[in-house]
Image (cartoon, rainbow, N blue to C red; front, top):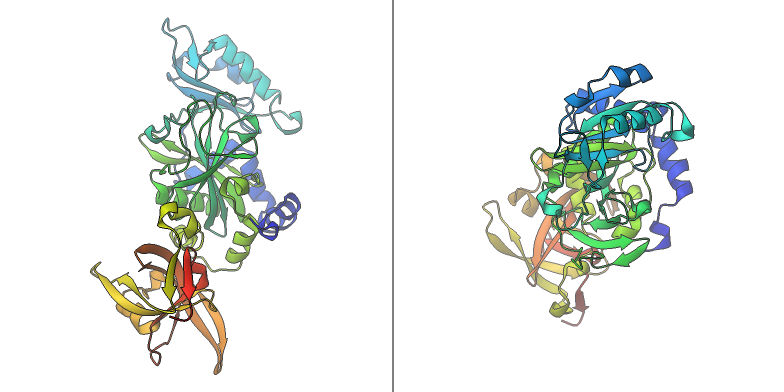
Length: 428
């Protein structure tokens, strides 16, 4: 990870948080209740709210016995997961509830805690706050082996409708079942293209296996991955924030839900992915992104994990000549052989316009954006499209520029960005 690609605290605050995030959007992010209202208005899934408490008399008037067996009591403006009580089930004697930490809480305990929230015990600057009771979201079966008692969440950084980085946060015994890294949870980087975990950090250091259990943390497939990314992108559009972190939980039955949003998300996600946010932000800034679905397409095309990370060690380095054949799928899904030129002097892969059209890759919804190029006859706009091909049996998912190569022998140039794991022999 190059230092120039890393987003630092000052850059986050001065550039992306202030330049793209309006005061109104920040006020929405600072209040979980305001976030709930905004998301509900545009029908973005988020946990249901059962009760709100604004004044001490609300606490006394409320029928606490009417609460369901499982719920979460939260401060609206709490920070870092502080002040949250998560109840998992009713006590066997029906006199209270059992939390995810296996502690008993009674109605009196909940009343006292709610009063503390109203007095600002867990809010910014100890200012008076609002308490609320929210639907409990249990662990999805995909995470039961990895999360200690609490509910894992997925932090997605979104900019300009494009999800640019993501991390799975796993509660541990040390974190008390909370998914907060500073309390001891594990952060696991996720490949944007596939939803498969890649690397993991704990207390700022890289780890491969979960403490205590020894389970490997890379290779976990996140369910409903495309829906997770689209939900995050839609939440960004609804919030009024241009740059934010969206925390998503996977409800066991209902699927992805937005838990909360953050106008200044932490930067540790860069360590979990061993990739810098700044470089990714620069690639997205200024792009015209139509909607959340378009943003997810761009994300998957641009931010797939390095191909070298996916190649098994035993496959080794493959030597290829400058003139090589690749395979692509036609409209029927059948692989066809295409002559290509391996060009380490070109950064991006390029495909002939006619071939791209014949393969069905030039439909309007497939074009990610257009890039201006300068050539001998002046300037021209070239579409950039998602492009998947096979080189020596390896599947490479990338983006390609579309150009007129009708006068050239080979309709595809494979650029150096897509040649990791290969050695090019120029004499062949």
